[in-house]
Image (cartoon, rainbow, N blue to C red; front, side):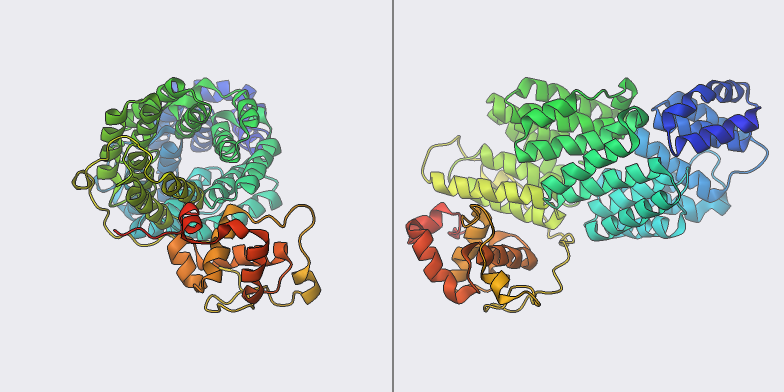
Length: 530
């Protein structure tokens, strides 16, 4: 009977997790009695993880490790990673091992232990190497799902987002071929998160919603918090607050708010409150994030930078000194390991500073986001920088003294999206339109009212007219060379021209107000003396 039940639970979970719920009580009773075999323990643990049932998972694991038959070292490592994916970083350090770990399992245990450090210190070369080992050596399956998800997330934290996305696509395809809808949905949600970080707001929103629909709201268990958080962030970035409010009405199990997914959901909800001028509600959500992370013995900025978040909320409430203190705490914790969290804190300090400091701090924040590979936050920071420069001498709160803010150590640049193979990064003349495109198509403006350049396209075009190379524009605007080329290509198409030679005349005709030093200052292109 138990044998049949465990097979049903495992097979049902891959397609329709909620259908397995009715079979679980008999497995749970057997686990309490200590009579559940290994396969039964695996099935019960799988269900417990998905539903945030920590107590049942721990009991099944005790039965598993206490059985006469030893647990495979790889499986043990996968289960340890799965536990932390759902229930947060444990206090045990990777070199301390853990109960039931045998010497023969040391390589797997060490690799998993190093990988888990991404939750505490962010990604680096060591966590990236361990992530690749896990991805290359673990076959997609019920016990390896969260281990693979952890490795993909660690690569993203370590600046290897392109590699992370390739692994997502590979595993999603395999899951679809094996008719494992649950696996596929998880990897699609992970991929949506990578797209969001890259600044592809619409694509991220669509993929996150597709992953939610693929499995169905009622089948996600506590993991529903992952796609919902991405949807919220995307809606906030797009200013689609009605859509975000509808997302918040989707039920989330209570147990989710004791998990890593719930932590990310709480943070996303807090930022929705900030964006809709409800800072007290935001404080409540960010403080819950703080409580969860402290319970998990996670001191550093990762998994979520709650100090920066609370600083932003306090700034909105007018608690300037509290905001500064929290931001400086975040910088101290993350300046050497987590450029994303450091960038958030630097941006808060800029908003709390006076005109002598705000642009400098925002410039450092932009550099931090560039290092982290987070194009979404980089774009927001550059817009803020342009806005602050436009304000000029308008009074703001007193500046934080420069000596109070530690300088960041030089961090290796995070991986940027791969450049288009059809574009030559070193060329600065007219031929930046992808090869093989007909002249007629290149000269034809896009349909609709697309002759109006976006803010980003206009910034790039202005510098191009002044004779800057693509690489120089990239350096000034804190974007990749590929991004510069894409902006120029879109500008040429919108204006119906072939390249730079016609760009200056076209801008003079269409944007006559953009001439002179005053307008460069207004666009945020003026380089301030350090």
